Image (tube, rainbow, N blue to C red; front, top):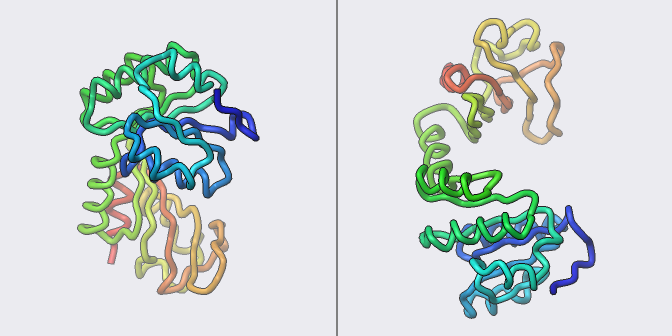
Length: 223
């Protein structure tokens, strides 16, 4: 059994050390989270042994193997297995049966995601789809960054449109005129500022915009 210096919830098991899983695991470690990484491939286990908190070679579809590693004591798990859909589903099932309270799983298709949810995943992510959609929005619109949520709600970063220049947000009124909320303003060389009605916007400012997806898209294309 792996013993963490810091018990959950600041400890996470990441299963699958491909591109997605290793990126998640290494990012968590940089953020100060203790990570137990599991993969069947001895080459990947050796590759990450010195960079992650704990790395183990094991069959993640085997509930007993997971229990021996102590995953039942952790609050969160990330199943980052790629194209092997059967292994992905069986791993989520094993984690659920082991009693892991919060299971995140990568899916490669919508059908795959639906199966993962049915066998015990609490959160399903679609990295390729999400990144493709994000890039498409950035290519075709005025967005510098973009996040879309499931309930038709989005957050984006965009250059301030001309109607906001040298005016306060109360004066330009993006909420009443365009149905979006300006969350914050970032000016080059200055700290991020949370938006208030009296916040002034300049020509080269970046705005953090939130609201219904279509309205955010339309606002970010105002020029």
